[in-house]
Image (tube, rainbow, N blue to C red; front, side, top):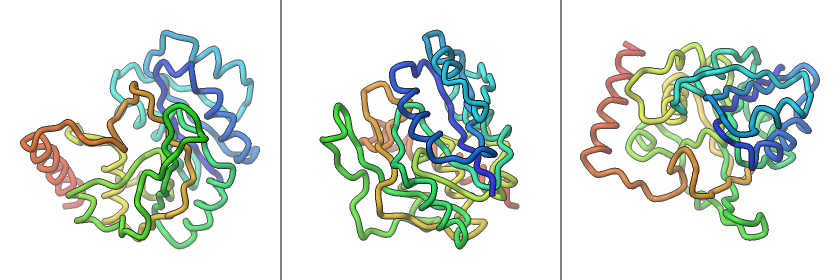
Amino acid sequence: MRISVCMAVFNGEKYIKDQLDSILLQIGPEDEVIISDDGSNDQTLPIIKSISDNRIKIVYSGQKSIIKNFENSLKTATGDVIFLSDQDDIWYPNKISIMVSFLNDYLMVFSNASVFKESMLDTYLLYDQNVQRTGFLKNFIKNNFIGATMAFQRKVLERALPFPKKIYMHDVWIGLVSEIEGKTHFIEEPLVYYRRHGNNASETGEKSSNSLFTKIKMRYDLGLSLLRRFL
């Protein structure tokens, strides 16, 4: 079973090496880390290239969109199992082995995460435990899917790609496609140190600043995109 870790980066020089180190220790010689760069103008690319690991593949996006940047990485993936990765987190050392074991029975899995801002000594769980996190309707109304904690079988990509134009984030789209296509599972154990630093590309894990009208419009567009994809 080959693994593809798909990452989108943009000006991630401060944290990218720590994240890649935590991933490369867990994958095999035939696996890959596909990094799509969205026009970084700092030291992100030189840092990545300095690691000199042939499992790392860099592709270029230039779309100025986190959704398109992830799509660019995903469409290059060749693995049987796909992991999504942010540029600024740190993976637990057993993340891949645990998630792959669940993917024998589930189409898509996602886990809890330890959120930290300054030091990993000061963390808290992103999700309360013993709360149901899967289910199409539940996640359509209030999204629980976080790309940085997700892994899925390759067949998800056959339905999920290409991403529709009017989705508000790639992870909710992949999660809902997975809910329609097969069984999903939430792992209550945290498997990612999820970094919050004020410059994150999304508000995931923090209270949304969107108005009620915007939230309704986002879900309308998402629902319409799902109907078009599956009908």
